[in-house]
Length: 336
Image (cartoon, rainbow, N blue to C red; front, side, top):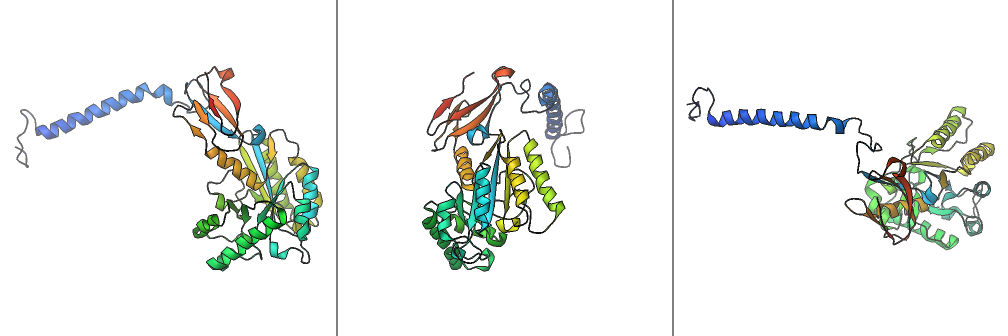
């Protein structure tokens, strides 16, 4: 017997229980080695776009509106009078802008007039920025509600459109106050924290932009960094979002740079220019897609037309990659 009182197996120093455990461990190791050997060919070079490795894989990826691979959002704060020159340049180059306005400052010195909102911004987005441009963290809950709901109400009256987005004044935000913003009717809120990349954020109420576009000071390094970021974006060959923000008053001595930038972004065959709220609406519509377990049935319950890129491993390589347009409320079955 061993120390526990369990009899030992004949010719062994181990009890039946411990001997069984030892045999089971060896058997398990043997099985894992066999399975590992069988799967070696399947685990080499895990490339999701390699048809010989994942023969029946179906991948469905979003394309931006009008079947574009990339998108740009141009965002401007405060509502200074220079916004009028800026919107003319945007129109000239076929670009769309999002303008975050302090409604209580309109028709005061250095700011746009109230009548300008409806007259010049019909093709662009008007968004909230706090009625009086007060930092969020310095406000009580009651003052937050007044500052942003009042701004939204006033801008909706002036523009004749829904206001569903905002930018944080001074970039000041409260991660614990996002639910309150959502209850006010805001679907996104932009910060001033640059990511220097082209990703879509997970939380639309903490939307960090790619970069701040230029600055009022002469800073060749900073200005050059903006153009370098844009060049990097233009050369990318996969889904990307470039989000630039700034203030029109910063461009008083840099309008030539602004026009050069707009010229670079304009007319690119794989890029679509969107307002921030149009982008959010499109992303939400994509998130609402209903897709079957085997990915062969796709339903679009939204009111938005969606463009999708399909990589279908059931097809031959030359026919495996294709684009589909999914109309609102439509259901599509992918055929072999």
